Length: 456
Ligand code: URP
Ligand code: ZN
Ligand code: ZN
Image (cartoon, rainbow, N blue to C red; front, side, top):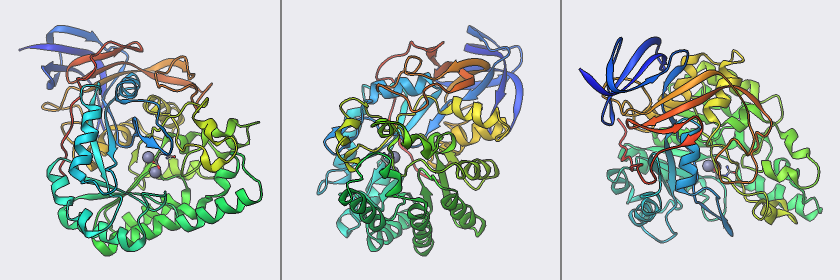
C-alpha cells in the first residue's frame, strides 16, 4: 500500500504508549502505524517525538472584553496555536443578552469560518439561568455544543447559586457538561472596592482582591451544586492548590468532575505583580497568578490524575493601549494572558524535563484528555488508524528561549519572556497537510472546520 504521506522513523508518544513506528497518512486521516511504510511524500522523524496534535480546550480569540477585544483573531490566533503544535482549539460562544443561543452560535461561526487554520469547537456560554435560556440547551447540543460555560463572577455573565443550579440541572438532563469559572463574586467585589477606596490602584492589588480562598470556596460550592444536580462539571483554569485538591477529592468520591489548569499557574507566580511601574499589568488575569507554594501542588495533582487537562485560557491583549486602559485603576485592566503557542513546549520543559510528568502523561493532559472530555476522541487527541492526521513532530533537544520574536501571537509581549526551553515542536501536520515547518506557517487560511461535538 502506498500512502500519501509517511512520517518515518520517529518515536510515537500517545497517552498509552511510546513506540518506534512510521505513520502512514491517506488524505485527512491516519491510515496505518507500522514499519517500512512507503508513500508519495516522506518526512524523516528519526530522533524526534511524534505526537497527536495538541487540543487546547480553553481559548478566547477575538473576544469582546469591556471596551476592547482580545488581540488575536481567528487567523492569527490559530496560526500561533499551530506553530506551537496545537491542531484543535475550543473557544466560546457568548450570545448577546436577550439573543438566542442558536443566533450566538451562528454569529461566532461566521467569525471563525474562513479564518481558522485549524479545526475548532465552541463551548456555549449560559449568561442567564432562566427557563427561556435553559430551554434552548437541547437545541445547542444538537448543533454541536455539548459543553456549557458558566461564570460565578463577572458583570453580565455571573449566575447566582439558584441560576447555576438550574443550569446544571438543565445541562445534566440533556446529557451535557458544564464548565465553570469559579470565584466568589461577593468577596471579589468587596476586595476591589476596599483597595480602590484606599487609593491602592496598582496592578499588584489585583491578586490581593481575589486571594486563594475566593477560588477554593467557589470550586467547592460549584462541585456541591453539580453533585446535587447530577451534572458533570469541568472547572476551568484552576490556579490554587486548595481548589485543585477539592476537585481531586470530589473525583475520589466518584463525582464526574474534571479539573483544568494552565501553564501560567504551573510556571509563573504572583511575584510578577511586584514588577516596577505598571509592568505587573502584563500578568493580570483571573484567577490571578498565585504564591510559590501553589504550583508544586498543581504539578503533583496533574501527574497523579487529580487534575485532567492543561488549557491555555489564551486571552491576549497588547500592553500598549490595551493593558494600559487600567493605568489609573487595576479594576480596568483587561483580564487575560497570551499563551496559545507555548503550551506543549512549556509542559515538556517544566513537566517532562523536570521529572514531574511522564511523556505519556504530557500527551494525555495536552492532547488526549481534552479530546475525550469534550467529545472529540478518537478523531482528535491520539495517533491511531482512523484518527484525523493531526500530528506534531517534536524535537526533544531543540533549545528555544521564549520571546516575542519567536512567537506568533498578536501581542507586544509574552509573559514567558526569557524562559529557556529544551524541547520544541518542529513540524505540525493537520488533517494530512503540513501547516508549520520549522516555525514557519505554510498552511492555508480558513482550512479549519467547525467540530460539532456530542458527548458519549
Ligand atoms: O483573565 C482571564 N482568565 N480572562 C479570560 C476570561 C476568563 O475568565 O477565562
Ligand atoms: Zn474564566
Ligand atoms: Zn477563559
